[in-house]
Length: 199
Image 1 (cartoon, helix red, strand yellow):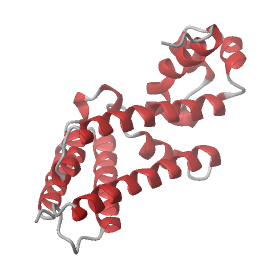
Image 2 (image 1 turned 45 degrees about the vertical axis):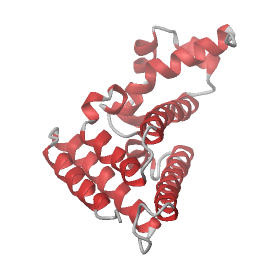
Image 3 (image 1 turned 60 degrees about the vertical axis):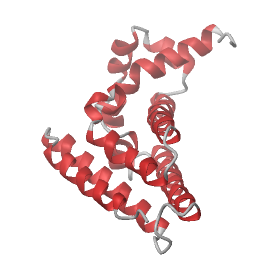
Image 4 (image 1 turned 135 degrees about the vertical axis):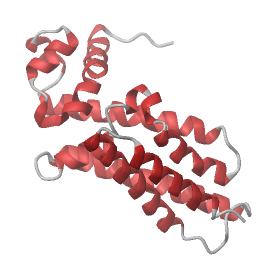
């Protein structure tokens, strides 16, 4: 195992300790005082490792997004059948409160909602993550069609757009209202939609 330099360890500590702060409070709502409180480091120490708050925010977005992606990928790869793989999404998001790093919300949704006009670099990062997510769902559907597990007339792009829209829209409602009833309702609908694709 490769040993990290002191500087790399400090950078990693800053990212890990501020990840939930940024994801909960957003970019604009997170102050330097929040970052120093979360890390226990001085302002100088943070700026010694990152050029500015923007650089911390970008690194944190990558960290939060990569954690969610790795978690989903592990669950998806544990299933073989295309339908079971797609069902990972409603299952995970229906029970998002059981996943510590999802409790503060979806990093793509949180970032996209806030950074649309105010932070072009964060917006670009969220846009790229969304495109990657869409492509990976499309690929799962195409794999399922090729293997004879999903109806051949299924439109992979349509499935991806609807799946993402249901998840993000339901997640947004859960965050705004503090209730999960609508999220569960949407995930039940998504599950039924996915099951209807089976041959």
